[in-house]
Length: 211
Length: 275
Image: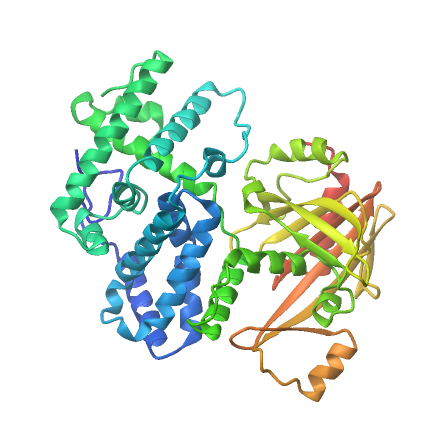
């Protein structure tokens, strides 16, 4: 099931962007306009706004913590260098994430390797030892992410933008510069694989998980 | 985010599909949460991006990782003036992001590894809460660059909404970082707390110092760091003390905390008996 949405909510379909969201978009567009007029303070404010999100997306796509810092740095440098080319400040976020995913793909290609698992998951980190349910969920989440990490990079990008960044298939198509149908197809394939991972886990834990 | 049990309660026909979606989303959120971002990280990134832009596209790419290491050198030293002015060029420090952790219980493991007791509360009464930790590898060198001493310390970041991050550095050995002339000396239960501030000015590479700035540098009131795209000022605060042979440093950049606020936090650390 591929959700059709402009922004995912847990309570059902969205009725439209909230006032806060509209205001935020307008504030961002104002900052972008200032940046295109060479205002470095506006650029710094945009870095503050987007750094965390961009870093997380870069990390989820590249699977490598240290590369993700470099990917974001490169993206932000390109953002400043190409600031005059930003024609639609209202769509800055799409422009930024488009540049970011290109950089992430470039790093993945350059690395020509999958990052070692321990780099992604770190050392054994103790969870709440007496909460079995939480331990299972952690384990399950780890298995799902491992599976996401093993997806081809473009499928992985779709999954990250769709599930983590809460973007619609239409928005993702703009970012990835492809047809919306291609996005849906990639998402469908990736999701089917991840669903299988959940089924295998359900079997491993002897637990019923609706599939 | 719906929990596992809640999601199981969803209607099985459509709910099962939603469950898969929720689990994928949850897995990605959990993974992303491991990579926490502090205000210091943002400042480092802004600085490194400006440096890259200034260097121009023809220049060799400088990794943010190197910049973070450089920043770590600055941030782990009380004698920032000395580092920037080159008087103590003999202490270096580096951290590796692969060693960062976000689980408070990891501190126990670090305690066992480093072999000394670390007093580190999970949260403070003023609202600051543990966010992440990272080991620091420090090396003291003589004038000829020979290593005299190597120590491993622990750097813990505490966060509070709307406030600059606070870092607690704990090291089992002393590399002599206490400010020679602290701004203020306070005490807590007989323990001497040395409070000092440093004023940093990041300036472009071709920046010409004014006579006033030079005088402030000579007086140890200002530290100038070259290579930034524009002139920016940062104020660094440090509270330094020793407790039972272990050195503690509470530090912050551009924080509104007063020396008394630092003293209160130091007091809670000194009184800390374990979670």
